[in-house]
Image 1 (cartoon, one colour):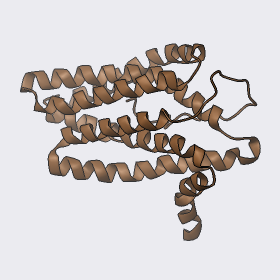
Image 2: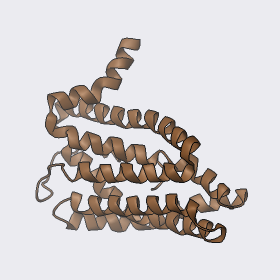
Image 3: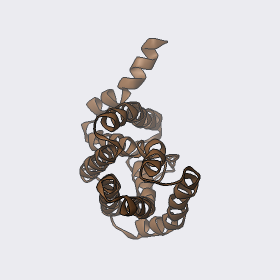
Length: 226
């Protein structure tokens, strides 16, 4: 009942309490999911606010997905050639943070330049996202514990993402109402910077050691790219 649901919400905290070394991984998951939660709802609203025809919103979203699809295979191959997954994740998050900040700032540009800047920044944001996402998925797999505890680990990590998905709409809605949609994008950029700081503290082996099969769990795999 309610007790089980409450324990589920607390599972990330109890897991990290038992294993403090996992805190950076869980915080990275939280901030990354929080940052991504902005885009599916507010990117279309922002584009229309800056002058995009409503019928152009679909192709705009599709352009980002198309870029993301082209880039991801290259990111996967590059990830396997690097000694550390974080070596690709960190610059990917940095690039996303910069593009999210540009998206936020586009609302303060002149009318003609604002929409063009939004379109270019939105498409470009998919490049660092696609390049680092395979490394992010691989890092989660490599950080997962043995089979006897893997289910608890994945459940706690998923609960961490769900908690971010609950808090994000409330936070972005409050910021958008008080300061405008552009400031909500700036908040997403800050969240990506925090995710970058957290993932930089994740401890990993210097090389990708062979391990027993683990579930391939992407960080919020169905989220809007960027």
